[in-house]
Image (cartoon, rainbow, N blue to C red; front, side, top):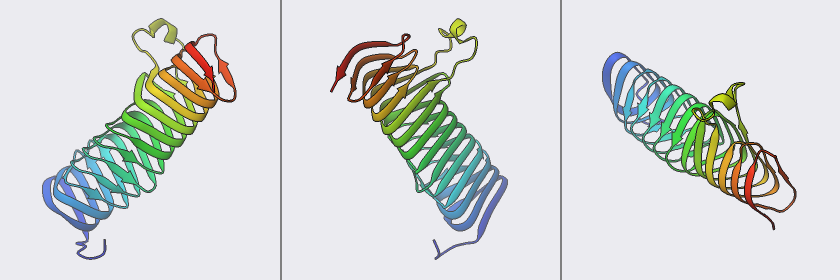
Amino acid sequence: MQSGIKGNLTINGYGSSNGGHFEKVKLNGRGTLNGNIECVRFECNGSGTVHGHLKMQNAKISGSGKVKGAVEGNDFAIEGNGSVSDSVSLTNKMKISGSGKIGGSLKADEIKINGKVTIANDCEAETFKADGQFTIGGLLSADQIDIRLHGESSVTEMGGQSIKVKGKKGRFYHLFKAFFPVKLTVKLIEGDDLELESTKADVVRGNNVTIGPDCEIDLVEYQGTLHQDDNAKVREIKKI
């Protein structure tokens, strides 16, 4: 990132620039970057667009920024409505507050979601925390998974050492649950310690397993302990 650095790039309002290597890139308004961007710091305040890949150390989208390519770097934060058309690969943290859309896979050491997120393919992290809604088209894999549901979420498969899913419900939930369901839908959940609520799964497989209220599970396989809430539906149980 040293050779060919052009200093800082700032676009205020309407404007466009070619890609390249920069120290700091800042888009205020509706700025457009045509080409791949490599920089230390990237900021998008408004509805800026990068037509290419973004490689950086730290990036933040505040507003409705778009990256029409892949993102690679250390830390990436979306506050508002941000989208990446390809994959995101980070060495540290991904934080999404608001609405985010990723057209490929997402990989980071720590992923924290507050809002609504769509990830087209796999999602991989050491720790994954979500407070809201999400759709993951592939495998969610993390050592620690902590989910607080707001509405409906879905993932194809989920695996980790510790997995907790809690259904966040308001005091009038039972009156309106037909219109505002709180549910995680998944084909397979596999891990060591599992605590599940409001989860609909084909197979749940673990060591110590707790099936909490509002769960609908076709098959539970466990090795150590199993606890099932009275308000949970489990079709078949196997100790392996």
